[in-house]
Amino acid sequence: MPTIKKNDFIEIEFTGKSNNEIFDTTDKQEAKSIGLEVEVKPMIVCVGNQMLIKGFDESLEGKEINKKYSIHLTPDKAYGKRQPGLLKIIPIKVFHQQNMNPVPGMMVQLDNYIAKILSVSGGRVSVDFNNPLAGKEIDYDFKITRIVSDDTEKVNALQEFFFKMRFDFEIKQDEKSKTKKVIFKKQEIKPFVDIFKNRFKEMTGLDFEVEEVKEAKQEKKENKQEKSKTKDNSTTQSQ
Image 1 (cartoon, rainbow, N blue to C red):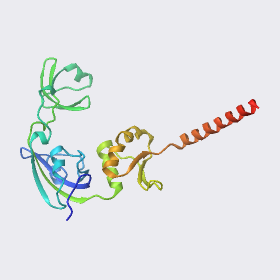
Image 2: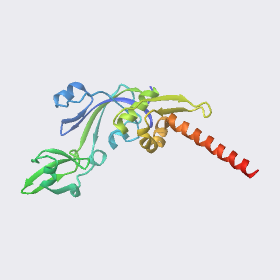
Image 3: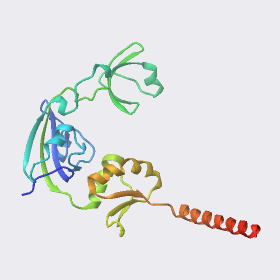
Image 4: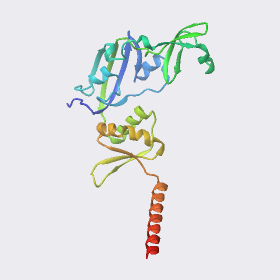
């Protein structure tokens, strides 16, 4: 049976625990037991590309399909050590301006970071920006259910992980280069595609681009015709 290698796309089931308490899972029953309301399902990830935490990702190479595995991770291979510099004191008015009433134990989002309220004293709020699992040892039970070979599944997995949503695309064969191209329809995501396209190509072997707007093509054509007319008029006048 073939073993998993770097850049393989795999479907994986797992449950993560800290101090024997589940903090993440792809199992519906276990998710229900911890009150996880979002719909859970097996993940599709590209091995060796940090789509899972460091130690978990590194453990996947060499594994076999449909075998059950367990791993134990120290903080340096999981969510890192706790950093005292991430403990902050914030004026309570900052929370009031966002219609929040901070209380100890409350989880809040500030500056795109999830933080935990440690204490509230007068007009000062002590906030911890460390990941709740920082400094903790982690255990994972997991099983790789299949190797994903379908290009559409691969692209959608990358979209969900890096873009946090899906956009329409099509996959075409480039006759000149004999390579496949993933062509997105929405112009709005071009900056993101430009950022990730080289990395995506390393992971999938596919080229990534955003479809050129037809209006833009027409405008280029009109500009070219206008330049040609100007040139012809200039030549006539010189004669």
